[in-house]
Length: 230
Image (cartoon, rainbow, N blue to C red; front, side, top):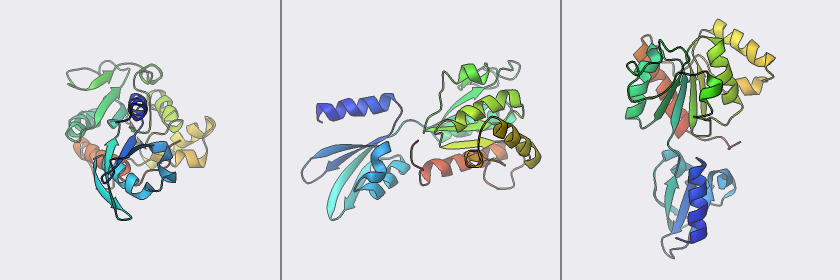
């Protein structure tokens, strides 16, 4: 691989930005396409499909064969709330190769006994998010029902290019949440990014079922058509 290509690849990896290395199988010629440049590329449709799959593979475009090497950051879920739903969600997410970070300053809930093998940050979101900043491969889930914990993280998520934002709560609870976010300066287009009620509508009742519905919606957002990077 050309040294300049390798240098760019490493820089994008370090910044948690996706790339696709395009190799012409007939000539061996290579070029690197950054996710931010994908929409304007002549192979945009094939590149986007391969990137959404998260896997490398061979494609044929206009009669030519190419190998597309996908480099995508490990997707992660940041959750506010060390609650029962989080306890069910964390091990399920691990099976899906999704990293999970739980944020909750309430140390009675945020314990390693309740959340083994999970990044657990018993801090307020303003502090914790310096360690797990939001990016285009982060899903954010608000589960505490406590505006002092959920709202700062929601605001940070809305200011980022998170691929998914979801918040637990009834329509009445969400209505009050929207009022607070409007007071914080967010418009209608901004708050439409929030999935609320959270999760796919599967009639979920128990914490485990709600966790399943949330994860299904996150996977749908991750593997479905991507919006343009901010």
